[in-house]
Length: 247
Image (cartoon, rainbow, N blue to C red; front, side, top):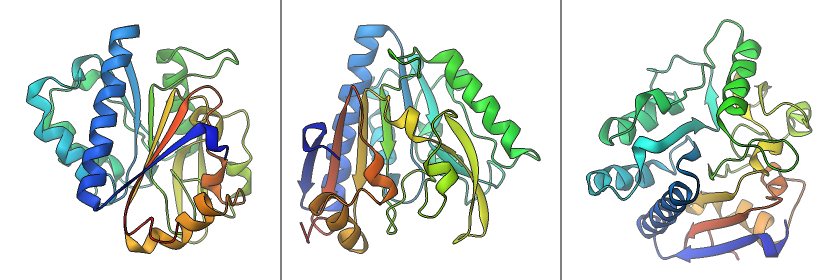
């Protein structure tokens, strides 16, 4: 991961890291609207971005984020119904979408609970290709790609050991069986991640310190998250002090 492509910000607490990420989120979405009239974002699941979403919801009435002109996508999803407590969509809906003036016709959930998850992944990719402008290689460009980092180095649902998914070069969205979880996931792939104009990775917690050291301290490119290398855009990593303690 080229140092020229990333900006690492370390905050004293998880709350402060979420505030910093919130400000970056607002700046990116606002600038995208100013330049192109619409903003395309991909949101992350898991527990780490929850506070970010809550902070965005708290300020949604101030019109700092142009929600009505923002196309909302998701980076990955679990093979459960959208109203299941384990669904990434469910978490984002409860914390953010239900509390912000979004245009629901612009919110695009991943149907990873579909009977044919591979067909659902193809449909999701088709939606991305239809709505997002392509870069010079014909790959749709998100204005903002929000990612997290797992303790094993995964990001989105790009897990160690899932070689076919990790090495995918054509499909932008695919399904994968994750042996360590014993479940299937739907996930975006590295081609679309690395075509993004801005990647924002939010990482908090003492339990992430070892993997953060490997990824950013030692530059371990064998980790899935080590393959996040935006070709044209920028990458900002926001850490709390606990996650960054070994750097």
